[in-house]
Image 1 (cartoon, rainbow, N blue to C red):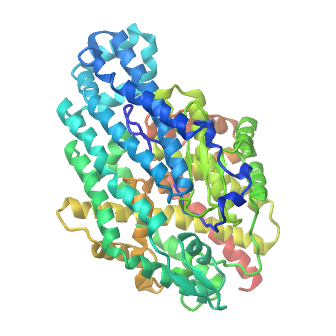
Image 2 (image 1 turned 90 degrees about the horizontal axis):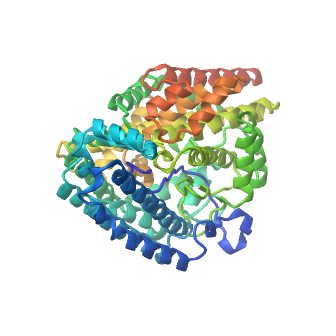
Image 3 (image 1 turned 60 degrees about the vertical axis):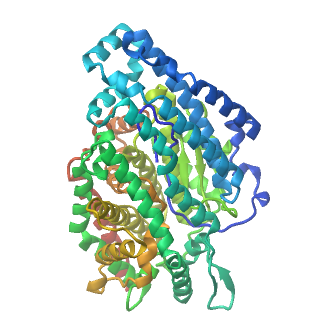
Length: 624
């Protein structure tokens, strides 16, 4: 999720699924926990700031009818909005991140509800702003900018406003759209609360007789178990438990799809996909091309699955085997302190300022490290605190995947840090389309660092397979999700009903095709048709495809930087500092990659095949 347009009052949120084992928060040292007093000293300070924002909101209508009378008036309104947005974002991240630490705590959830009401009220009161500006013409705005140089920092958001003019509404309509914000986020809120706080977890008895409550964190842990019998037990219990709530999850996701459709139709877009991509000037062809390219290259993905089957030594590869360790007697575990050292060393090609900022993030409590009861699952970086610093949420569990997740989230954090440092507030935000480049770029650097410094074939095999697992999880799995998301929106737009059963049918068809179920490449158990209910990103409005496109872009960019090309490094650092000073596609072109061409995807598949060649050479050498 991210800010959309210069008037929005939302925070940036980036998520990834990760592994987690829980312990009580009181048992964790402070240095491994967020210091949210960097935002507000206390809840009381938050409430005081909320009251101040509420009072400022009441004054917004004083600009009505005056905005385009002079350059000075336009500047005053834009400055007012920027300052209000900064404080509103602070309010949001303080409430949301405190809630994320314990989703069972209704106080912070209540604070978020207060803000939704407040921001909806502001949106309604400020509904006149955009229509009033758009009654003028772009030539007038350009003339104002020439007369008042302080308006220059608003050039890009103003230009984008006029570019999307056809999808702007009248003042009364904009007011209704703003008021609708109070309800269109309900499905996502219900999903988050139920999935993380209230959904009961099944208890199972493992093969050794131990009983385990299969929470999401325990599922993530046991799906990576070397014991296939335990994986089978945990998978069946976990997904059959989701199936117990299929109808409810179906209503939640259906409600979210309907919200997307409402916004798209109200703003006269051809589809919800176009509505999601057009504001960032991303052609819908980029989305469709990704799905087409992945489907054309499923043979490469199936080659990976055959290698996994070979390494696991199983007669039939199953979906429940996908997270299992492929190399026996290799302990790829790292404490958090060990993991941070690996990441710092891996990121050294990006220069001293980059690395010293990473060290600051680690040392100054920008990161909440360990899983605790009620803490939201996954991981993200929130870089919306413009006058402060970014924050990272992890659920670190000492696995190599957790080290990679740390590198990933630090990529987001550094992009936020450098954009906030180098851009004025109106262009400090950036589209998710480019955000995932910065995160996956760091994963590429970490992988290459590890491979260069490992001599043992078994450890190298484990790392190479982990990297291929990244291709599966980022390029193929996220595109699989993107195809599902597109399909369910298309079904709704055609007037077809969306239920838990229809979601499961659609998901099952896609996942079985991707994994070659009918070709006997990977067997997908029927209960996997509930996996759609596990994915929070389906509530983020066409978010997931950007993991895949960014992954392909980052491979191309990282290769240039790792080669020692100083210009490539300079271009990349400029990209990290660019915020939203240009459209995402153009920013990536300046950095050195053209996402409207097939070249980045082709390079990614070539890199994947190269790794598979290396794995097969080692396996052949070992006689496996």
